Image 1 (cartoon, rainbow, N blue to C red):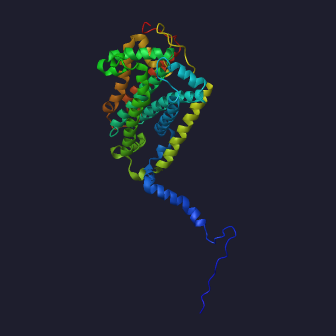
Image 2: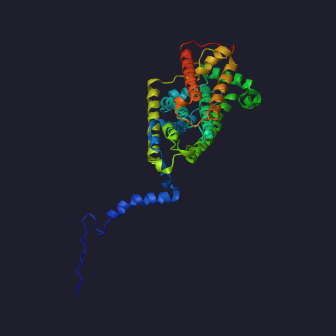
Image 3: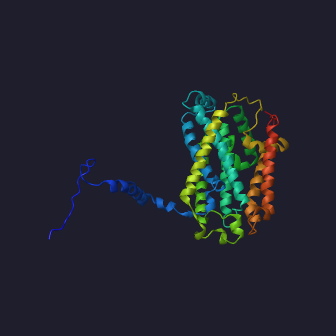
Length: 378
C-alpha cells in the first residue's frame, strides 16, 4: 500500500526550498546563548526588592553612570591639556576656543562632576533616612563615605586647580596651607615632596590616575558589598520583622536586576542631558591669569560651606570642620545601634542628618551672598 506524502513547493522568495524562518528566529537566541555561555550574562537576572526600582534607590547607580561619563569626557580633554604651569591655562583656552566641541565637552565634564557629587550626596541622604547603614552594612557606609570624599575633596578640587586661572591658583594656595597642617600625611601635596616636578603636574597625575584608581577600587568594594548583603529593606519592612538579619528573604524579592539596571542607566542618561543643557545655558569661562599677590575669588559652590568656616577660623577651619563632619557621619552606624529603622524613631540620626543639611545649605547661601575675603595674605 502506498503511503501518501506531500512534497512542499519551493517558495519563490526562497529558491532553496528551505524554510529559514526558524533559523532567523533562532539566530538572536543562539547569539544570546553563545554570549551567555562565555560571559555568564544570565547571572545578572537575579531578583531584587520591588522598591529597588524607584528613583531613591537608583541614585547610587546614576552616580556610577555619571562617573563613567566623567572618565570618557576626561579622557577626551586630556588629549588637549598640558599640565606644565607655563602652558596649562593656554591649553584650557585652546580646549575652550579651538578644539572641536571643546567648550561643550569641557562644560559637560564640569557640570557632570558637580551633578555626580549632588547625586552621591542625595544617595547618602537616602541611606541615612532609611537606616541602610545599620548592621550588617556598616562597612559599606564607610566605603561610601570614602567615595564621596574622593569625589568632592579629590576629583573636584584637583580639577579646579587644573584650569590654572586665578581661582585655580588660590585653590592651590589653600591646598598648600592645609597640607602644612597635617604634617607627614600632607607631604604628597606639598612642594617639599620633590623638586624635580612642579606641583601642578603632580596634581594632574592625581586627577587622572591616582584618584580614579582609588575610586575604582572603592566602587568595586561598594558594589561587591551591595551584592553580598543585598539591597536594604525599607524601614517599614525591617520594623515589621520581614527582614531578619537586615536581609529580605528571597520570596520577598519581586523585582529584577535588569529592570533596576535599566532604571539606573535611564537616570544616568538624564544626568548627562542635564549636564549638557547646563553647559549651554551656563557655560564655564576661564578666569584671568594667576596673580600671586591677589586673593579675589571664592571656591566652587560645592565648597562654600567650608569657605564659611575659613572665614571664621582661618585655614584650620577647613581641615577641622571637614574632619568633624566626616568623622560624625563615620561614627553614626556605631552610635545608632537600635533595631528601629523609621527616622522618627531614631533621634540621633535625625539630629545628625537634619543638622548637617541645615548647616551645609545655610552656610552655602551665606557665602554666596558675601564678597570674597582674604584668608592667606596673598
